[in-house]
Image 1 (cartoon, one colour):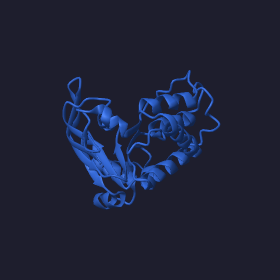
Image 2 (image 1 turned 180 degrees about the horizontal axis):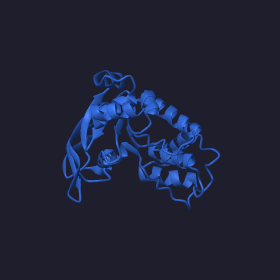
Image 3 (image 1 turned 90 degrees about the vertical axis):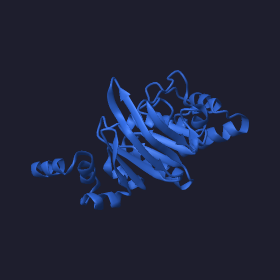
Image 4 (image 1 turned 90 degrees about the horizontal axis):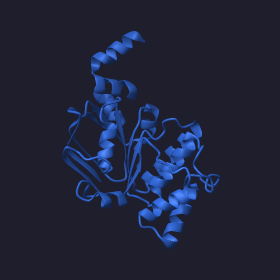
Length: 249
């Protein structure tokens, strides 16, 4: 489980997160929606232990992120908004490095590498350096890095951005398979069809606050809308913005 309690964060005196609180149970896929600047990436970075909060508490698998970030990272996989690939290394060398940093050795290391190579269809890329990789290829390697130590929790920040159809399909299949295996998954996205296909629950953020929380169908019913895009606009911007857009359509 991921627990976020009363999270606050400012940058240059500007509030980015304002008493943000939610809980995400194990074995479910949760989508985080919000306009640019709503605080999604800041929230995910704090949950991942990559950024310190000004106030509040985050627990991943019962572990306080601020007090023991290394323990949290052992059970967490993260695919951020930057791939962070080491272009002088081959895919195998790169994934081996990160697996060893997570403490994998010997047969455990070999099994983990073979697993992500097969699951993410990395065979053709395995011996290649990552320099010159397409966006889809870079995303597959980043996802493999996040999964190589078999984490219980997975966080992804707009993972399908810039992907072609086949790469996006592979990513969605992988996430659904991980969910069935009990992995807790949180992802941010602006693609409503993707959110509908993947998510058991949707969290909607606006100006650093939570303005919507529930299953997609329940949120649509709450907002009185028949699609998720209109629901998001209504919750994040207000009914007046939705009415304005409808008038312009």
